[in-house]
Image 1 (cartoon, helix red, strand yellow):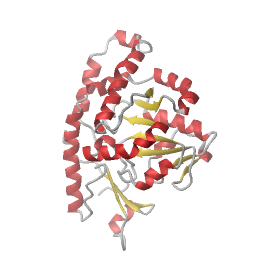
Image 2 (image 1 turned 30 degrees about the vertical axis):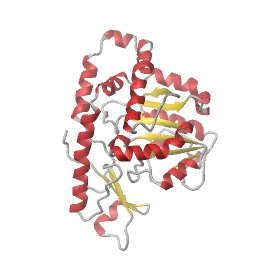
Image 3 (image 1 turned 180 degrees about the horizontal axis):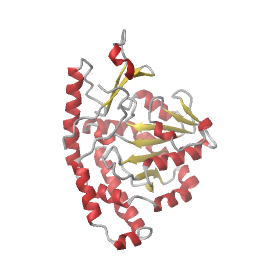
Image 4 (image 1 turned 90 degrees about the vertical axis):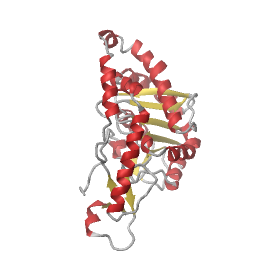
Length: 299
């Protein structure tokens, strides 16, 4: 067991193949036309594919007909911009123990708190949470207490199909007032280049407030990552996820820990009853033992 292991992604052979296909199809003219024809590709080809993929992953629960898309160099760039802009005027709340990346680009630290009890103007959470790989009732209440939310679809594709549909149904009432940011680097395994795409309802007040800035960000979307996403075989990736999920369950059983079937296989966390075993102490923070898994490369 490695102590303090970070939540690192595991690559997919399907992702590497998609990158090769994306790069092989690139021409000099594509580079010339990136800010014109490339932008049309983003809106007319990539965004419909992203919406369709998310809808399929949700079991058809999510529909994004009334949502507009913006982009940035990475999901972290986009989210940092939003958190920074909101925190300059209004309080931002982060769910305790969730992703520290929400704050990495922010100078407005006095406006940002890890606090699930008091509402803010903007509540931020990874879906599922990197605290424990789940979306819990407490997390949903945290999101519902604030007028707007920033949801980072991080490990969502690594959930089982049944759980993806359940989580999508739980989040459905919150989507019209959320900014939905998609993490292609971890959820879809495209870590060799970054791509940030966010979906927001066409009538969301943040669209009016930030659209000029977001349109400029969108010029600089990563076309190689976008092309790779278009080319990737998601079903092949999910077959690999099933093998990795089984490996984690076996590891938990062999080490005398509860085998939690739900949640992402990337991260499991537990509250210990009774005395904490010495070998788990380095993994104990904020009342939970948190394990971040990196299963063997199986595909």
